[in-house]
Length: 277
Image 1: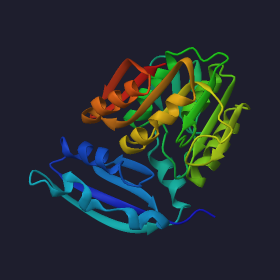
Image 2: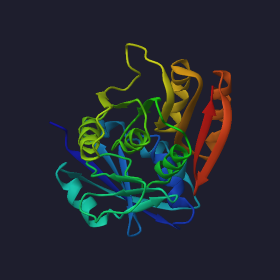
Image 3: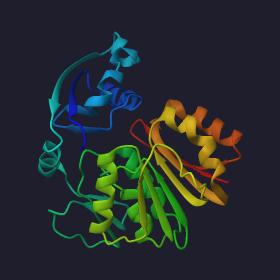
């Protein structure tokens, strides 16, 4: 059974630009999902990982320019869906892609993704997911082998399958995300998605034409060489989960590992990068 979760509720004064700066820095800690609604930033961490949350390590918490206060409480996992049903609104990416929950009416788009989140990240509302979806819409997926590292709800892999990917390998280290991706793949009738509970690449060393990794700066820097190693020639690596000040160091690590910078997107303080091999 999945563990209970702790909810951290932050209030930031002034909000602009500090709320997004705080959110960006929180991604370096073991929080698994975030919710920004009604002027409150909420972050969620499994009970077993809560001892690894050291907020004092964040520079924003030490800044004299902003006041950050927080409250913490334990919540049972069963509360999550009810929270999302009250706040989850459909989104449109470009002119072709819609992401909605199963309790929303159908939307007439070429790619309609029905996503019901559990305690997992990737409904399409966060800027990083939106940029990754936008990148994916512009890439031919037909016949491609796709890897989605840190799959969350499975939204990126599901879009890839809808666009004709041969197979999609989805990996996450959170049992909630694995269960949620399996359910969402079934809900969207995607039969070529394999979901694995793990925190590293598959042991059988498969090769991929396209890799998604929407995680955080530290994990990306640590794993980038591994991603490059399993990427086929002319393959594409899409990265997000970091912000503008991290772009240079991530680009440098990618180039060291034989990749070329192809494109960059930014939304708010967040960035996404496209590399080719």
